[in-house]
Image 1 (tube, rainbow, N blue to C red):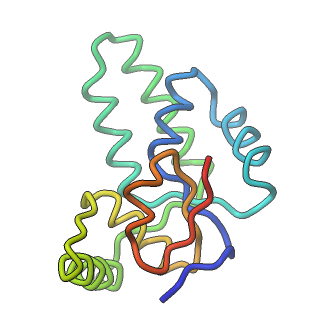
Image 2: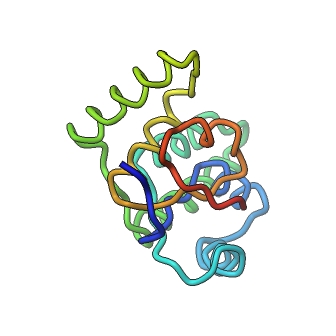
Length: 142
C-alpha cells in the first residue's frame, strides 16, 4: 500500500510547535496551507492522545488552559481518523516488515503513518527521520 496525495495527515510535531507558538487553530491552519498548499488535512487519533498528554503535563494552570483550548478547537475543526482494527493490522504488518530489516519506528509514529497509508494520505512532519522508515509512505517536509 502506498500513500498518494489525496490529503495530508498532520503529525503531532507540527501541532505541538503551533501550540508553543501560541497560534490559534485558524492561524495554524492558514500557516499549514501556506506551507503545503491547499490540500485536505486531517489528524490521526493518536495525535489527539499526544496533545492530551501535554494538557495533563502542563506545569501551570495557564499553560494547561491554553493547551486545552487548542486541543478542543482542533477536535471540532479537523477531521480525525480513528485507529481501527484495519489500522492495527497494518501497523502489525509495517512493524514486522521493519523488524525484518532491522528498522524500528516509534509506535506512535507508526500508528500515524499507518493511518495515513490507510486513507491514501501523505504525512507532513518536522520529524522525517522516523516517518521515512515507513515503507510506501509519502512525506511532505514542514
